Image (tube, rainbow, N blue to C red; front, side):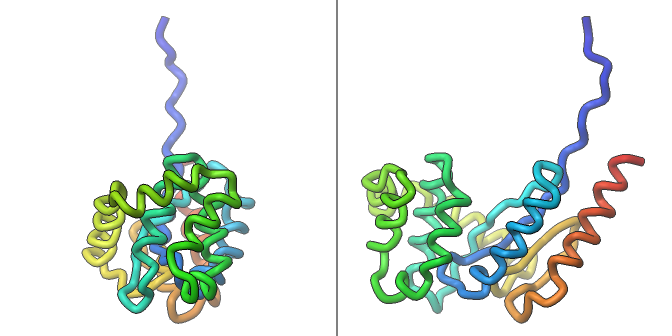
Amino acid sequence: MSDSSPARPAAPVLDVWCELQCSDCRTALDDLRALRARYGDRLEIRLRHFPLEKHKHAFAAAQAAEEAWEQGRGWDYAEAVLGRVEELERRGEAVLVDVAHELGLDADEVDTALIDGRHILVVDADQAEGKAIGVTGTPTYVIGGERLDGGKSQEGLRERIEEITDRLLAGQDA
């Protein structure tokens, strides 16, 4: 017997080009939480890494976040690290391991991932893709083919993302 029910269309994707040592990205968390609350699984929000050279621990933080994703707690980890950007600036990579421990992750594995570089290619690929589409700072959002720069101001961005998401979702129902 074949299932003739129509396949559910894929959720629209919001790529968030983020840097985990960026205070503007920390500010953006409230908008991301609101979007997740409003849309649930009807909007796929993906964290994309864009470590900036001016933040010396950002690349390591991106790698540690990838390991946290491997352990099933990526968003929790990213939010916790963003909540401690000043401490990350002061104390460096030790904060990344501390956060992993506090969240109940395998902190030794996070530390090992930073040493062996197993997630470097993922971070490099995100950064290269970001550069290719014109990302220059963080946070930058891409949804429905539109790029929105949140590095200058978050003002009105959530509303714009909601407009685009609603339009994309309405197109699925047509």
